[in-house]
Image (cartoon, rainbow, N blue to C red; front, side):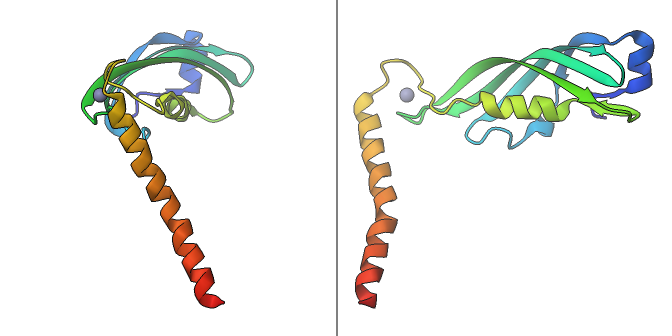
Length: 148
Ligand SMILES: [Zn+2]
């Protein structure tokens, strides 16, 4: 059962929702591109208007990442807030897409195990990456030369 689906008539009867839920990480597989999710907690409230549901809350996610410098595995806890309004006449509202979208924006671009992690490793890594990026163009140049 998806714990982030709410029956709208029940919400209206109870005057909304306020609480914390632990999300099933399996439902959010692939939300992070580089990280592997370990735990997700969502504290949120749903307020009710005329066929509108105002949702606001906080996501606390723990995930494993690779250090961008030394490639060591690190565990990070990320926190972010979200709010959204759903206009719906449907029997149910699902707030999982909102959580998924927020989560996907929470993923850090670069993760470092400690502030003084070997920076020479980073430089080596950056140079290797640069070389890789240049190669398709050099191949392209060769192709162009061949055509002439
Ligand atoms: Zn590191």
